[in-house]
Length: 456
Image (cartoon, rainbow, N blue to C red):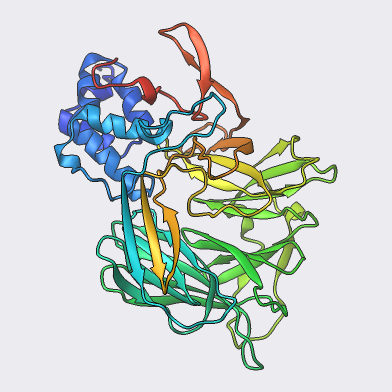
C-alpha cells in the first residue's frame, strides 16, 4: 500500500493558486510569496494585486475615486497605493518628529445644494460615504444623498425630520443602509429610530425598521449613531449613560447601561466594542462577541406600540477580553472611540481613543485629506474632506490619541485564541537589518512599507 502523497500549495496549478489568493488578504498573499521563488512570482502577479485592491474598495478602505484605472497599473504601483494607506501620502513631511503633518489637497469638488427651509436648531452635517462617490447631507433638517461626481441629488428623506444619521455602504450592490434618528413631538408621536436601505443607482429606498426608542423631553434625545452589518447603535442623551443596540434584520434590540459617564459603543463585524470607566476611574475597552448577546435581545416596539423597554447593565455582559488604559484616569476631556480596519489583515483592526473637549466628526477622524468636497447651501458653506482611510496616521485637524489598542479576531477554523489585545507602541522585527523598529501598524505581518515586487 503506497503512502499518501503530501500536496503543497506550490504544487497546484497556477489557476488554482490564483483562486486561493482571491480569497486571501494582503498579509496572507505576501507571506505565501515569501516561501519560494515560484510562489513569489504568482503572489506578485498583477491580477492578484488588482483583486487585492478591489477587495480594499469593497471593504471601504480604499475609495473608488482613484484617478487611475487599476487595469493600467503595474504591481509596484499597486503596492505603492497600499503602502500609502499605511504610511500616508508622499507629500507628508512633518517639520518635526512630533509635529503636525499636512498633506497637499490634490483636487476639490464643490456641491451646490439648494437652500431649504427648516427648523432653526438644524445643523449642517455631512458624511462622505466610504466609496467617495456619494455624500449624505442634513439640509435644513432633511437628510439628502448627493452624487459627488455630477452634483446630482440622488435621494431625499421626506417623511420626518432627521437629526442624526450614519451609513454603511456596499459598493458591489450599490446599497447603503442608513440609520436615521428622529425627534417626533406631539401627543401622537414618539421618538424613533428608522433604518432604510437605499439603492444609490436608482434613488429608491426601502424601510427596513422603524423602532420606538426611549422617550425624553429633549430636542435632541439621541446622538452618535453607528452601523455595521445587521447591527446599529445609538447613544441615548438622557444622562442615564445608555446606548440602544438594534438588530434591524432580526427586528430586535436591547439597551445597555453603565454608571460610567464615558460609556461608548462601537461596532465591528460580529463584535461590539464597549468603552467605560472602572470603579477606580481607569478607562476600559471591552470586546464582546455578538453570540453572547442572545439572552438580551427583545422584540422591537413599533412607534405606536407601548411596553417596557429592555435594558441590561454593561458589567453583566460577558466579555471576550478587556484592555485597560491608565493614562486617562485624571483626564478632564471627553473620550471617544474609533475603529479602523487593517488594510493588511481582514481579521484585525485598531481602536483609537482620543481625548478631546468636543466630539471628533466620525466621518474623518485622523485622516489625511487628498481631496476636498465643499457643500454650498443658500450662501453658507460647509467643507469637509475625502478620508484617506489610513488608520495609523494623524492630521493636525484632530487631536492625537492618548491610547491605542488593537485586536485580531481569529477565524473560526483556527485554534488560536479568539482575541489578542496589545497597547501601542508595538515593535516589528526587521530581520534583514537586524534591529527592531517602531511599528505604526499594530499586528502587521510582512512589512508592506518596504515591499516591492522584486523583494523576497
